[in-house]
Image (tube, rainbow, N blue to C red; front, side, top):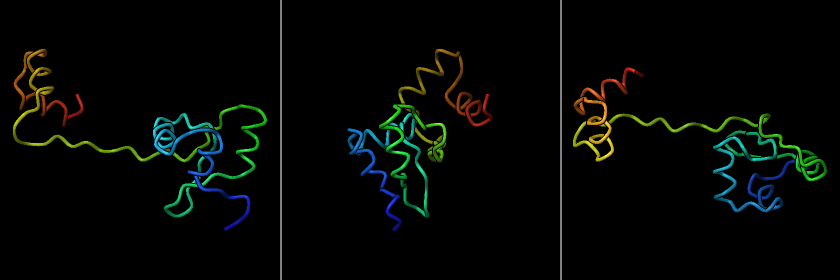
Length: 104
């Protein structure tokens, strides 16, 4: 591995983030150091870390975007949230689910 490449976890630790907080910040696109992906590994460059420490300017907009979880609407018994939301909109749960699936 090139000396200029450090792991995402190490970069997070060096700027005071816990591992969990770093992954949450990355998912929200607010992790301040540019994150790159090499294969399946998340890495940062030492030069990006040093630049952030020197200037304090966020590089989040340059990072590889985090994968978004795709939440599918499940068939079966409705959740309490679904029931309340359907009632608030004056719909049945199947109608609410159909709207969600259609992207309305």
